[in-house]
Image (cartoon, rainbow, N blue to C red; front, side, top):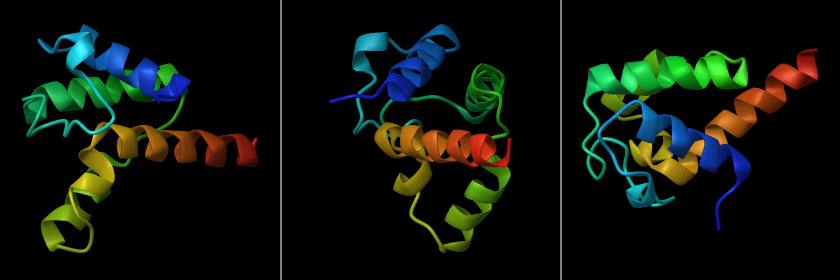
Length: 96
């Protein structure tokens, strides 16, 4: 089952890449499974920032993964990515 946030992110990915919308599932890894390269991913993150009115901390996420302090799946598998975005949106709304 998907959430409205997941569906919106999947739509953004489909619009900003060569990935077919129906191949974007909660278990899909953005890079390994969907084949999105780092430049396209930055465009996608920018579109997510704009759509949700947040700033996705992709640099710190990447640093955590590269340092081995977090598995890539925590941020770059679609279901988890949607959950992280939901958390960022909730944190922003809590501050407002």
